Length: 181
Image 1 (spheres, rainbow, N blue to C red):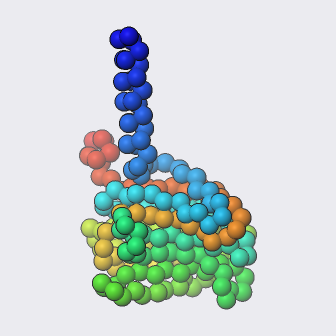
Image 2 (cartoon, one colour; image 1 turned 180 degrees about the vertical axis):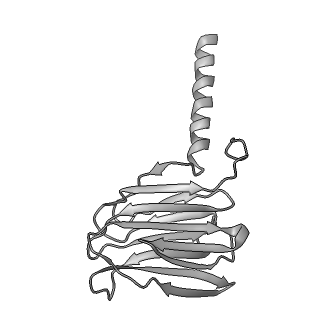
Image 3 (cartoon, one colour; image 1 turned 90 degrees about the vertical axis):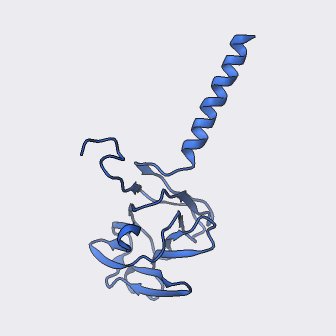
């Protein structure tokens, strides 16, 4: 009886640990697979972070990386790769909050040709009020007025789209990472 009870307690403890770990973002690669417009979401730790993506897109495919508060209704910013009114490929579009109810929109200058590799980074740094988008070497930096707590990646295509490599990188200091300064 004691052995049976101990086994149940151990299983409950492991399950709680796994569930606790799955709700926060962690280092390392993440695969984002989208089925019929379903988003892929992460809760973010407070402070700076980044998402790095390597992928390719066909004509008509789009991907959006949205930063928001935990309730997901108050959007802070999004970076989107879209091909509306594009001649040869996808163009980066950054939309960000400038004040309580105001948004600004900026496009990156160069299109990424359809089917060509896309190396993209979205980096946020609330301590320095900075939001940076980079697509294949093109950069756009803007002021970040609020700290995001949620990241949602979505694609409005009907077919499944898979990001070949998706890295979520919470920025940490050496002491937070357990390293010597």
